[in-house]
Image 1 (cartoon, rainbow, N blue to C red):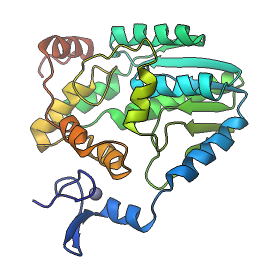
Image 2 (image 1 turned 120 degrees about the vertical axis):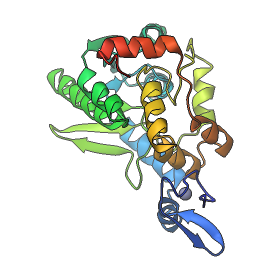
Image 3 (image 1 turned 180 degrees about the horizontal axis):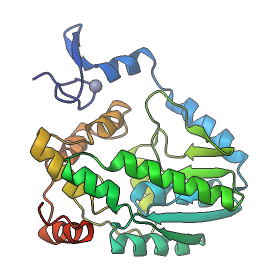
Length: 273
Ligand SMILES: [Zn+2]
């Protein structure tokens, strides 16, 4: 099986061509043709952030949103700030406590909104699909409405730069999403986390807060023989933001502890799984 020589895609997850003797996936080919200038992206972010005087941070309590909150408060010094967490019903309780503790530590107002995404999670688990896209789309929509209601114009997120895009995005209602972690390495993120009272939760999957991801990955693995996070993690490796070794570890088949499966089954009323 051909494996991309630049990222972690292989023939199961991407189309791979051999170019000058080297296997390269289509996404890497585009990247090599139009490389992203890390410095230019970081500069664009700094210019954007200078204009921001009031904002909410989309705060999942996961490591990336914690880094985004820290940067917004301590580096960009946005004067009026609110950390808004959306609990989709299957967030780890410890992750919520962790999130609240860090917001307090940074002196940022913390708001927790509760919703029930059981419909998304149940469907994903039953069909052995990824719940992530539907979940994050719904969360962004909830946050957008909250932002409008409270009269803010900016939502700052811990997102990475999506393929071929800008570090910001205009949403309906005149709200701008700023992806503050665009082109920031894993190591830079960990450096910030070490300064904070952040407690790492050991959860299966590339997450520090979501209880559904592990079971969903396990179901997907059972059906497809690989992870559905390949694309996201491949991008991190391609941009030089994550080592190949770490990425390969993240893409291994997860082992979900029985207590986690129990909780997810009970909550979603999925006793057959
Ligand atoms: Zn590739």
